[in-house]
Image (cartoon, rainbow, N blue to C red; front, side):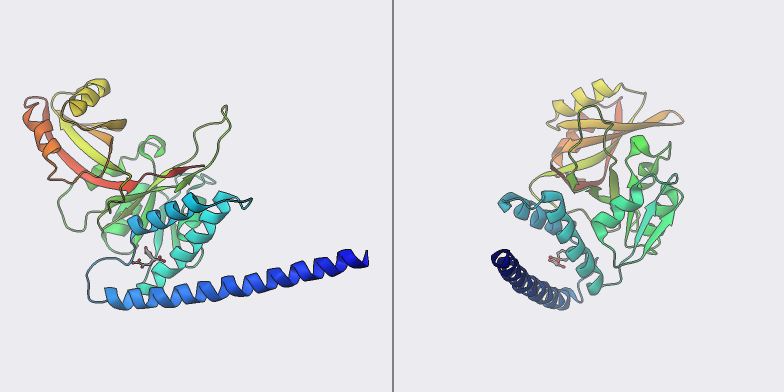
Length: 285
Ligand SMILES: O=C(O)C(=O)C[C@]1(C(=O)O)C=C[C@@H](O)C=C1
């Protein structure tokens, strides 16, 4: 008994020593980000670097071993980076919570952390407006299929400079879901900054067609020019034209030759294509 409590004491002392080291490292990391902020000063754009953050998380998850749960590991680093982004420039989050208890507030908090203001709004159109008007640094909106008919993605089809773009998808680590459970909640992150290429990305593309074209046909047309369509997320009729939201593999820029080829090879069907953003592919649990 005496031995057990002696070893318990010693184990707790080791934990205290580890906590000190962890804490020192967190403070040291914050100081380094202070230097990064100074180096970024004078450069336009947001402090937030979604691609860099995704690469950090992927690297850590990739080297992880032992019993500490990966979702908890990701959560710790999300909290650290969420805190540090707002130390560089004012940072705030607007989140659309279409109905009570819908879970989007948790998704936003889990990703951006507890430190900076989080403004909860009733719908995604409000969030788009807050981001466009720079009243929020980032916005979190439900994936189109769960956005209750709110086609926020249509507002992103614009060349105006303050038009929000999709820069992320939440959660960054997909939870493990038992087979008979519904699809987990997911959301997109909007900002007026550009998405960043990470080496494992997806792009959101709005394809304008006249007349309407089936989702299967649109997938085939995309494949024909070398674009791999992951899914067709939504469609919307606007008078005589149709707008389709496609999710394609890879980081595709607006001037990508495949987008030009898609229109040229299908004149009379496809009128235009518009990249509305992209995101690092989330990790699966
Ligand atoms: O690398 C940067 O530019 C940083 O600002 C540092 C840091 C980090 O904590 O590692 C913080 C915020 C950015 O979104 C990305 C990374």
